[in-house]
Length: 147
Image (cartoon, rainbow, N blue to C red; front, side, top):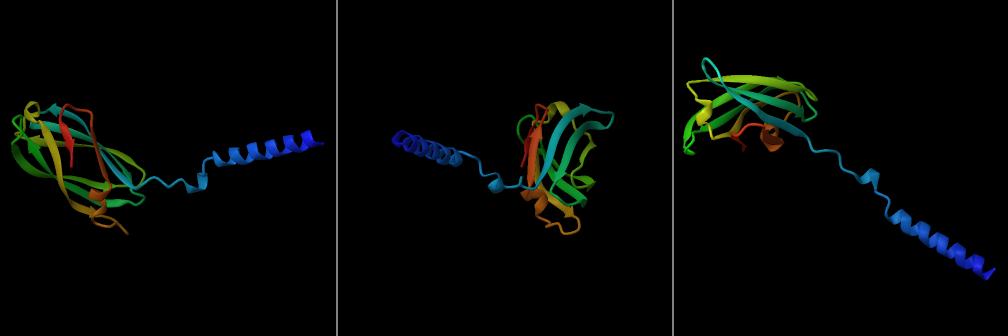
């Protein structure tokens, strides 16, 4: 009987310790709202340089308009110019590809594209600062890209 009680205590102790290692699924936070902006390609075009972006709106709300002021840096790291890129509407949960032709810009001389600010961030129930606060940038080019 004594060995049965010892086995029972050992079993209950083992069970209690195993519960301590079970992940708390209910406590896992939901992913943070995010607006992903990827500089996908930079190609020479008839007009100058064509930048292609892949945008994913994971903010949880539709954006009726999203536009960003960007700074273009040349090969020596000097700001060549400022311009605004208008991504127009970005439906929630949707990925969108958008191209911009930058007249008079040589892609080979671009070293960096900096997002200066969101000039427009509009939609029903959207905080105007959300586009910059939730912005995540990446690049598939040799050009540095970010905020």
